[in-house]
Image (tube, rainbow, N blue to C red; front, side, top):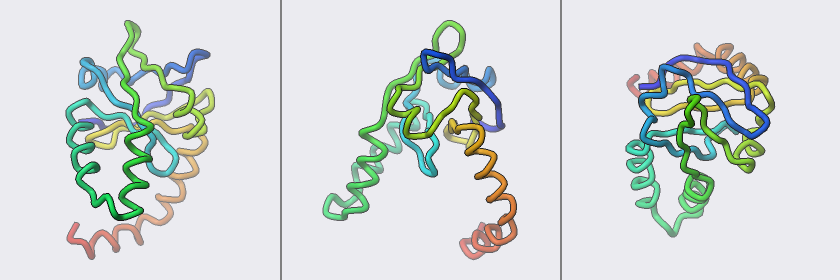
Length: 143
């Protein structure tokens, strides 16, 4: 599982170090794609395959299903760790997420997310300030 929050830098070639505690989980490869909230999602190949199968099973006749499939699937790229534990983030994905030099890599159980550091800080502050309201809504769902 991926958990925790880590600060890293994007080098001039677009590579980001994967936190050491996550490297073993993606040592055989990973998939990086556009995420929600303008971050990037990084999945193990197994978790990606499971998600992709669910996405392609969505009703083709529904515009939202097609849009979500396009967002997630067309932007996907294979990512392999280099000898220094880094992955290359393609330029189009760096632009999508607005990544600057400083990024946050966060663990969200079944995936990593890569955020521009300032965007993550803003998102986290907003979410933390609404924590009680979010908890109440989740309580309605049985969580």
